[in-house]
Length: 622
Image (tube, rainbow, N blue to C red; front, side, top):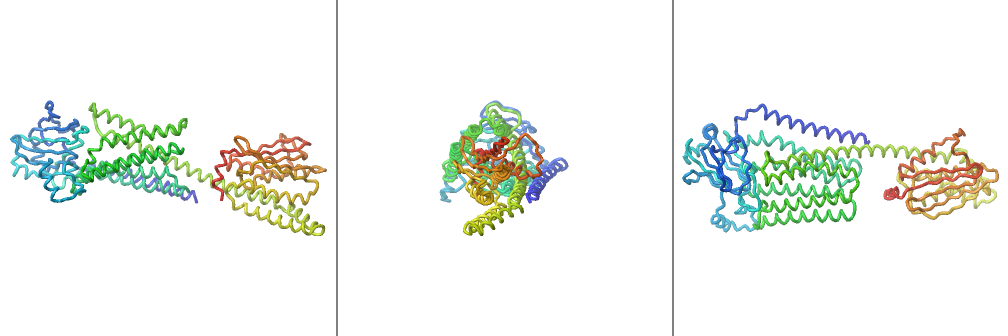
């Protein structure tokens, strides 16, 4: 059954991976074969120069994104002839900035700026204290300028000198211009065409990632027969990673469908907060000690509280989410750093823990590069997203490998249960084989004439003994030693009837608070009776004792019978399968072992050693 379920799991993984590869292939094909003349994405729609924060003027390169960090950046020059004459429309997608397009004489063509007087008036009319559209928040906006308007009403010609001013209104940090303004020139429905060719394929890719995280890891955990918090939190992490990457792809298009620019910005920020929270919960799933787990809970709670606080500040018009971005980034960085320290404290010296931390190295490296990019402009951008993608792919591969290992362990456990069942059948049948039943019934029959009362008690004991053997077939977990001892006493009571004064039973039970496989001591006692004391002409004593050491519990079976040479390979015609099964069950279920010591003519001692670490199985008692 487990093999069938496991096969379905890996089939599902294969299907998901095939869908991911197919989506990527379609995306590459569209990008390669479809003509991009239907739209253009220049870095700037003006041909001229620009100045950052009042600095020197630099030439505009239409083929190279403007990556300068700024508070206010000014472009001046002529409208690109290709954009003005060849395409019919121009869309400007802006994030968290105000901007104005005007002529060199000061005539405003298009303006998106904050007007305090107008905002106060409109706010007074609406009277919405919890409105999402804060009057001083730019948000995410898409504005389309049509060529007919530019060349008609606005009077823009090939020789018109235009000025494009962009202002980042927040004082907490500088941003890159290419992250704030995106330009698309096209014919009809160009923004939707650009979304279809540029954004939709990766969006579909990450939608699959979301479903992969939301269903595969939790379902795989359930199918394997346990609810593993680690897999559940990683499924959540994969889901929010996919959601975060989807938002990175579509954030510049949100205003096409959501009219309020502030809501568009809030959606982008909230997905980022959810992703960081998922990272913290994922790290917390590796905490086992009470102290580190409590510290991890506090760290996660602090971050969630901060996220809720900045969200409430947004709703109450105190401070918008973008103004709180730097603070939240610092809180997130500190939270993740604390989680890493806690992880190292709990898993110091663990080689697997080191590999786990190394798997996060790409993300940490790209974060460091982005911080460096803030001070020194580096070629390229969005290093964080690349590092995040590499890290998440490594995590997914690592977790799938871990699931595969768990699956193999489940198969091995099933095999062990099968062998356990067979061992129990072997032990049971060895105890109720015909000559044993014959001897027991004969002894009882003799007692019926000599001592009917004792015969009655012997019959009841023998029936309980047989029932105990049959019940053992249903028992899959270790049992308390007291239960095993009661069954042993029934067996020895029956043997005592047969051997009478030739068999003496002694007990020295000093420890009982431990577990062991059912019917694991009985084969040792049986050997002591039948092949030790039973082979001695004048009989002897079988002594059963237990004791506790610092590291283990011990069950000792001693007899003063004939003994044997443990180094001699003797073919005595008897099957030793029962003893081998007993040793294997003790090893697999409790980590125990059997030590045999014997001296010819003096007797045998069998010691069952049960390490205290193996006593965790006591929790599985049914």
